[in-house]
Length: 81
Image 1: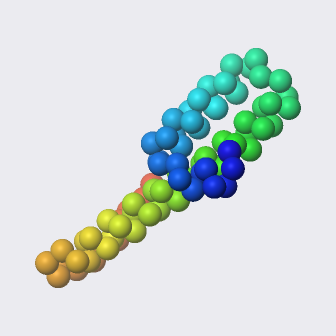
Image 2: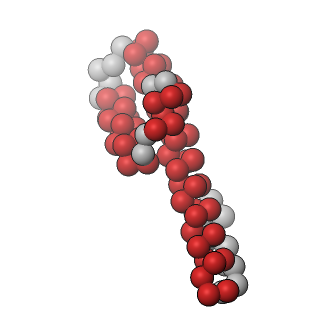
């Protein structure tokens, strides 16, 4: 997957593609060269998913700040728990 195409992929599409890659890799029927290519593509898709989630988290934080002057509450993630 090229950088241009990953930039336009939605979170849901990237996650679905990533799930397909994982399923094919887990089947054990993928040749090594193809396995490496799928691993690289999966890493790119994972970065897209992480970026989309981070963007959503920032958007939620901004909306919380703007809502009726309510004090900002940090959005807790699993990483911080």
